[in-house]
Image 1 (tube, helix red, strand yellow):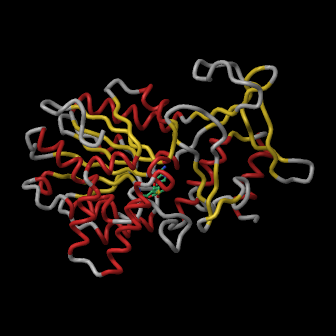
Image 2 (image 1 turned 135 degrees about the vertical axis):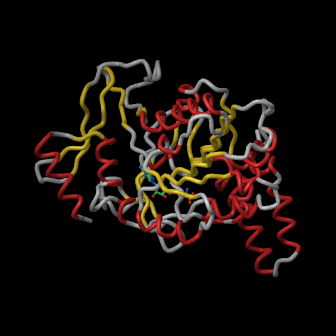
Image 3 (image 1 turned 90 degrees about the vertical axis):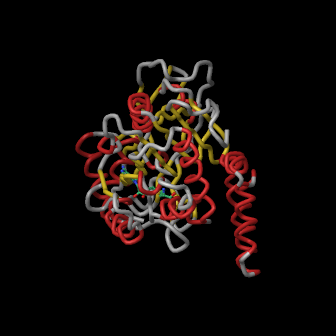
Length: 353
Ligand SMILES: C[S@@+](CC[C@H](N)C(=O)[O-])C[C@H]1O[C@@H](n2cnc3c(N)ncnc32)[C@H](O)[C@@H]1O
């Protein structure tokens, strides 16, 4: 499918030569006129994909309780910055606030900040979140206040940020790039690169390695802010803790499509390399699978509570949602949770890990 953005990208390749995956993804996702996230509202059953908060209120409630627990251990500070990166339809935050409404003083202490690029989603978040302290910012760093404890959430945010791909060849490492063939169609190519230290050693020819400096930068910024002002961060995404490979994917209307088709019309992502993220932080990082994390926090108990006053149809939906969020063959194992915590009096092993 040729889109307006396809022509723009091809023109840039003709002018400047083959394009990195990172540049291709930046244009496809955030081109000011035709970018996927700048233009489309991609979430939900009507959209291209569905995320954990859209599956069930249980998800946002558990995340809320995780932060409320840390807040109480911190001595219930009266002012904390709660920054959510890529809040989508605002569903996680609605459930976060409802799930923690009985934690005295917590709601009033929060200064909520949303890092969001999509105007339609910003409008939806504004309709849903009526908290007295809520604002919209362009970057994570904009939400940092010195000496104010900071809570940071990113659910399926990091995977949407650009990354580069490299491939091992017989003669060393090369970057995978997107060029044009004689007929003017997109085609993959390789450009030799020097061997920086982050490449895995001892891999065979043909192996692909992905590197995402922007994702590392977000996590590094979170780590530094938590060290300076105290607080906690949690990033949840599909990804791996060890290994490497070609995980570049495009999803449109809940189906996988070719990554070079439908520029700006399909969601482009890759799996998040959680080991690489843990390597850039100085605080101790806590890692778990989504399934284990939610189960340790008591998601089953909360589902039982909700079931007590539910219709039989709602009970069935709750059961299905629980399975989808936690089962190993659904989201439970594929999705990982990475947390950083830094605050006085807070236990070394936060709940859920
Ligand atoms: C996959 S959606 C996840 C939404 C939500 N967290 C959820 O779980 O339903 C990614 C979100 O990040 C936002 N986003 C993507 N790239 C962004 C960027 N570079 N800066 C700010 N927000 C971005 C999107 O608009 C969207 O809200």
